[in-house]
Length: 589
Figure 1 (cartoon, rainbow, N blue to C red):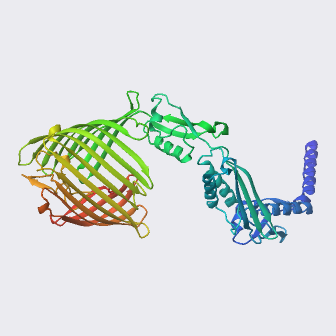
Figure 2: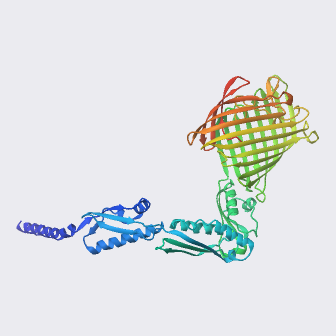
Figure 3: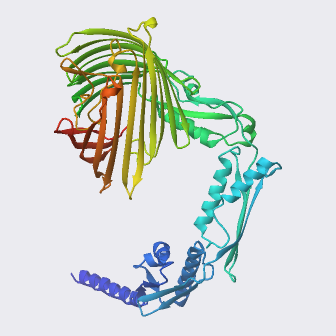
């Protein structure tokens, strides 16, 4: 017992001695709190990056050497940070207010301005010739920093990067920054900039090298490409090919680039790395339209039919007023210029007292090319069809026709799903002849124009007009697809779907002439929600002398869905003297 007490007394004495020895050290150290005094122009930068402001729990020794080291480090950090914003002569003081509180005072001084800029070029781009001189002048004109601007490191880095990208984007894939300097004169607060770009040799395209294909045919990528060996390198053309291939359903991902090795400049291979997409897909869908009622659909898609990269698109669609089954096979394009397809379809509909059954087979060639601000689509199709038509209270008739049809569509809009600026023009011509398997000689002409005019901050005015004429002795023997009916959503609202046309027995059938026009103002009072007011007019008839426009007008609600604006409209049909509800996608083309 005595030994235990002696041992406990010794341990207590040792602990007391240690505390006594550590007490002066703890008393000589204090937690550090720093107050920043700096102008608003530089305060956010310092508050975000200065270390001393983010270590409130640090302990600073009373030793003078420690305080001086902290002050030197802080001044160095402040100077480095302010230099990125053009301040090269700041005044920095770190003062002790009391035992725990410190004050950091920063006076940034006058920001340095750019006094001169010198942009030079080496390599092939630095050679003689009018074309090269014009290219250099264009690059210098596009240089972002000018004399008189405040120097900032981020702007300097961005300007050099943009210059290099502009040189490397066309002809000179291996371009690099050979030299760059920012010479600072703190006394005059000026900076002289100089940058030299070595363009290297001009690059020319070689063969396309594709990797990643397993089940698809090896020539699939080449069939979508418009790049030719020997063509000067252009990054935009490579990106255009990449964008085209990314929209090809057979491919899940695509990367198109070249190796930027000057040794390959004479014929640099275009490397296309792809990942194949799943080839087969079964789909189900449902929907509703005020035109044709509720809809259900089953679709089957195979984008590698017979292992040849052909695309099969087929579906069975059942609507309340119309039922359709179709199958189309699309072949890969030839040289990226046009695409051929073959298909068959059968449809049965009962609309406005007319029961119509149609079967058709056909072949088509489509072509899409880009233009400034948009695209132009053309389509040439040969179609053999037969139809059976039965108007309520009338006789059943059968018609057949072999038709050749051409369509041309130019789109120049800012957004394909939600346009606010631009226009769409569509033209069609088609017909058949009795000498070539048709029951009647006829020629169908059709045109449609939609104009989008931005109004106020977010609003848009939509102007639409369409017209058509079928040149024939009479409508007898002409398939309904080559005649005209109108009315309903996206045409003349306030009237039932395809209710404007020619009365035959107790049904409305197609006439030889069509004209419609519409003006609609959409007010977006929230990013996703808007309201519309509109006036529509139009009609379809078989005689120009008795043609009479029918008016409809109303208001509606708009909601921006991922598929485009959804429209819910209430319209008054002036001729019918009744109110109708219309529902559908509001994109008008």
